Amino acid sequence: MKQPQGNIKMADLIESNYHLLAVLTRFGITGGFGEKTVRDICEKNHLDTDTFLLICNVYTHRDHEPSEEILRDGHVDDILRYLHQSHDYYTNNALVLLASTIEELIIPCSVAQKKAIWQFFTDYKEELDKHFAYEEGKVIPYVQSLLLGKRNPSYSIDRFEENHSNIDEKLSDLKNLILKSLPTACDDRLRVRLLNYIFALRSDLDSHTAIEDNILVPMVRLIENPYATHRSAAPAKEEEGDRDELSEREIEILVSVAQGLLNKEIADKHNISINTVITHRKNLTRKSGIKSVAGLTVYAILNGYVDINSVK
Image 1 (cartoon, rainbow, N blue to C red):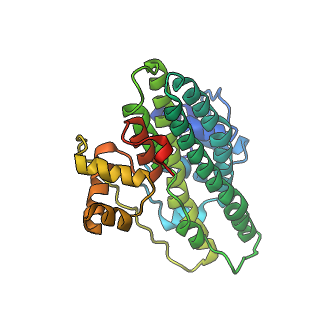
Image 2 (cartoon, rainbow, N blue to C red):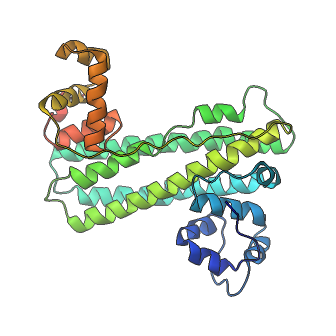
């Protein structure tokens, strides 16, 4: 996929994808572009033009994998700058907005429902904070040291990729819980507002992850080993199936999952094989749209399948 050139007008680039406004904000680039080109704006903001356009290209086409030549010519410090500012935005803006909207939306819910939803969101926020703290405390300093010619023999960018947790899964579950399982007494205007916030954050996090996977990791690999050949493969995305009503057996399995039982314990309890348990759990995810155990637990509580006091 061809990368835009630096002589394109910044206003035209944003017109092609308004989501790129988020990229500008994280580089501290303000509006009023007039007829200035991308190169003009980047030079003014001490930013490498080709690296900026590389981020924009991956932001727009998340499956885009830049060539080895582009990666070698890129400025890793600009990638780190973007990621650091993204972490700040997620922590101090996006999550704060989600929290305040959720708090207002769940006012009509029962005490148990409020507790379940709020705990789920709190756990997600803590998971995201931990993810960003790892990147800020381990990954970014490691790469900065590499740029200074200092190599930590006990660490490599492959370690980061191995521990690169899926920060989208629980957010997707939260979206499905809000979309399908909240009581009808909840304000629909607030529900729609919250869903808009969640969809926007999910899209932004997808771009964040793509930039890490398709730019940062292969770029740092080439710094670690300048003679290596860059190779990567985008993981296949799972397609969503149709949503159906849960069967009685699936509800039984859902309750067991919510109670904290492992697959073998569920199999023993219901006198079925582990493979059958796994099949039922896949069906639960397909029908509910919920992937994580925590999300399935909240789903079970909101739909009255379990009492919150029976959940560990």
